Length: 122
Image (cartoon, rainbow, N blue to C red; front, side, top):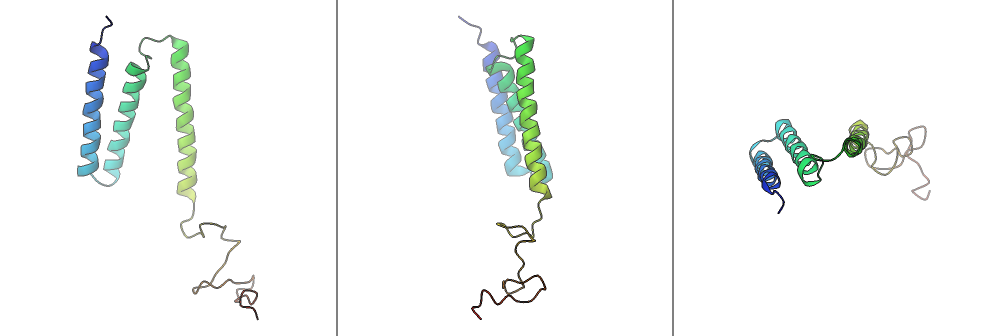
């Protein structure tokens, strides 16, 4: 029979970190809550990679490729977050600011800033 002590301990540690993450969500708000939740997620991911996916006893080549996969995921998440943060909140959600210009009443404007008559039928 296989030794089950390490996976059971890893599972217990995973449950403890999961409980900490749930408690942080309920008790801590703002930036610290988000940072603690991200830290808990990183710890849980490392537990899964190390114990349940077998990287603890794997050869070095498999470890390098697993690390490359995690790094690729980090790059993709970073690029997504940079795109999300750099967007202007005041933009029209379905068009660029240069494409759609409207006055305070929502009427389309022409390039000179006058109300366009093409939409009014005149």
